Image (cartoon, rainbow, N blue to C red; front, side, top):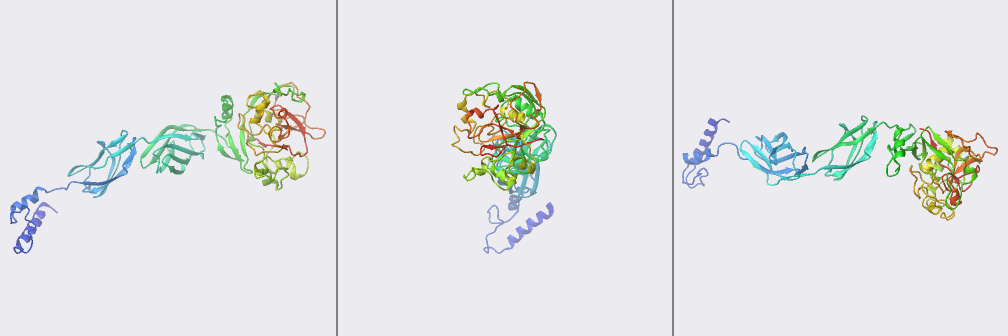
Length: 490
């Protein structure tokens, strides 16, 4: 409607008011109260001609990150001509007038604390009654913060003001399975990326927060027979820097799970060590069959079961349980025993290996994995037989039975029960002593007259003398103190 038509409408209204008989009703158009409707009243009306001032009834949300990027919605009246929204005096971006009563805009960066909100329209600037609060949105940790470049690593992001997270990107690529667990935690699964450190960006109602270089992709291979648990070794488990470096240098995942059995396995890297008894313990000297000490080099990495094979894992493939200790509530988690490399199919370790695709570690592989970089009798760096109680179930603390795997301290690779609980069969046939010559990837004698294999690590029925890194005895038939752990080549 143009000015001419507007004036005609006002005059018509005033004329209608005048035409009403005196006393019939209050004269609503008598704006100055002088008892008549005339030009003076029209002047009053025209003095306020133009746009009405805007009002602000609400702003949501009223909190956002200091880096800006929070989309706020402003409700009120007279907002159709909004030309600017400012927070703390700084112009917002992406102003969008949705209706005369609703405007949206994106907050600028700001300092921690409260900041005024204002809207500028054709009628002037209106200030919101409630300020906007800038909070320090942040990411404090990403666990794990490394993974294979193929993606698929589940990560947990911890920080502040992360509630309502809608997206996470790594290296600019969206993650999958993003879940806003709480105001301080978000979970996601990494996408595929390029080798190296990349930024992690968490997006939500308070804007976007960036963890610069927060995740590192590396070239890591997961064996085809396994699923990934943890790509790089945990430095809280593998504390020796040289072992950490050796594992990482293989390019293979550190911790995996065999897809066919669910058995957890850890990577053992190539390395060189001195095999045999280079020192006795406080109560027991070296025995002849632990000698001669000789240098051994293993040139290939391999995976080894983190725990001894349990009764539950045996039954899942063999369908029967030969174990003596199978009536206790925790028996499924105890090592299977009463097995050997001779005997019926239902108690034969070799039959289990055939059904699962595993192998036994060689004797050299077993000792290298057991020692985990140490040269002492016990892998806690001690010669004290009393301290074996922290590492192993032996005749001194077992109360005449096996115990659930993983109940004692692990070694420097993260393996449990390599000493005590049950003696572990290895692939090598028994030989009475070692040669002193340096060897590469030794496999022991090619046979034995009565097919004895080597048993390593001691057991629940034997003393500490048999539960040290170099101890070895012969065996073949099933017995209640004998079990095994499995190995697999990558």
